[in-house]
Image (cartoon, rainbow, N blue to C red; front, side):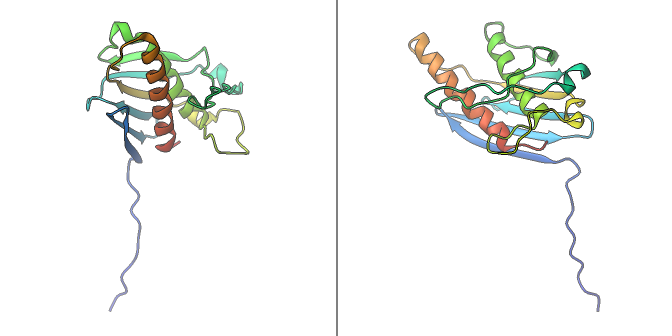
Length: 176
């Protein structure tokens, strides 16, 4: 009689995902790691949204990165400051014109999390980019819900909270 062999089958495409309620809006983040690129989907609408490829010139690979100071009230965590050389290339669909600046902030920050492999709790974290990560484009699907508010200040506070929560979700789904 043969003994049963125990084997673990590794998924051909690594996938991580999580879901949270952010200001009463169901939010999902999913990451997939491919040999030649990384896919990150962030949705509050149940759709993929606009797909954008983010790349960085190889000349930026040797430079380290700075950390933002975060906010005094702790609402915004310290995150890697995006390189000015990041290139955003729309692939599918388009960002709503009135939300382009906001989407660009999300796209740049998500890409920096991938390129740097940033983890806020890593005490020995080196502020440099891995050549393996930086040479692979990051494809980001982003579909954000419009935030309900009465004043511009409400929008700013809600947006900061949403941004922070989504960046934490992206780090939780880290494959890189």
